[in-house]
Length: 369
Image (cartoon, rainbow, N blue to C red):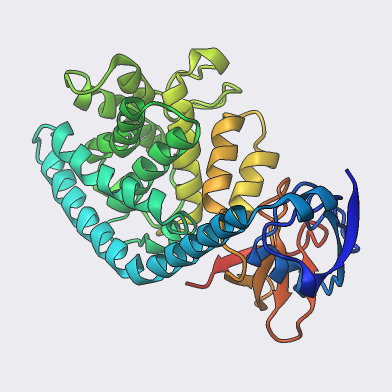
C-alpha cells in the first residue's frame, strides 16, 4: 500500500492508516487499515503522535459523499453516547423494579407456589434489549447488585448476561429468548434450600455445600413440565454448574456431554457471582475476574462464550473514567484488540500513560459511573 506521512492536524476523518502504529508499546496503538474517526485522532494526540502514515489512494479517491457519510456516522455515535448518559437512571429504575418483581416470585416459590415461566420471561427480556442498546450497562451491572435480595440480583444478571452472550454468538432470536430465560431460572431451586444455609455469613461446611449443590436438581424439577421451555433449555438449567474439565456438579460431566446452553450460563453465572458483593466477601474487579476466567481457569469454560462476555464488558468508549487497583484515577485512551481487559490509561493526576498490558501488577478496579 502506497502511503504518505501526514501531520496529525491535517488528517481528515475517514483517512486509512497504512501501517501498524507503535509508540513504545508491545502492541500497536492503531492497526493497519484503521479508518480514522475523531476518537482515533484523540488517541493519537494523547500519545503525542505528530505524523501518521496514511494511504495515498484513500486520500485522493474519497468522495465528498463518503466524507459526509462518515461524519454522519460519527454524529450518530455521539448522539448515542449522550443518550446513554440520559437513560442510565431509567435503566436502573427498570432494573430495580425487576429485582423487586423477581424477589416476590422467589418468596412465593419458598411457600410452594409453582414457577410461572411466562411471567419471568417478561421480567428479563426488556432488560436485555435495553442493555444491548446501552452497552456500558454490562460493565456496570455488578455494581447494581447488593447483599439485600442477592438471589434476585444474581438471577436477573445471569439471565441478562446469558442472553447477551447468545446474541453476541449470533444465536437466533428464539434461542436467545430460551437461553436468557434459562439463565434467569437457573437458581430457582435455591428456594428449596434452607435459608440459614443460603445466607450463612461464614464458610460452608462440607455437608452444607452438598445441600447447596442440590439446587440444580430442584431448579430442574421446578421447570421440567413447562411447555414454554425446550428440552435443551431444561438440560442447560440442570447442568449450569458442570465444567468442561469434569470438575463441576451435579454429575461431573465433561466436554460434549454438557449442553451449549449450560456452557453459556456457566460463564455468566461465575462472572457475576465473583464480581458481586456477598455476605462473606467484597466484590472483585470485573476486569480481573475476566482475566482469571480466561487464563487461570482455562479449560473449564467455553472460550467462545468467555470471549463474548469480555467483548460485552470491555466495550467501553475512549475517555471512560476508571479507578485502578492502586487507587489512582485515570481515563481509558486505547483498548488493545488482543487484550481488552488491559487498556492504556492516562492518569488524572500526572498525565502519565500506563499500558496495563505491560504493567501486570495493576488492573482496573472499577468504572467510575
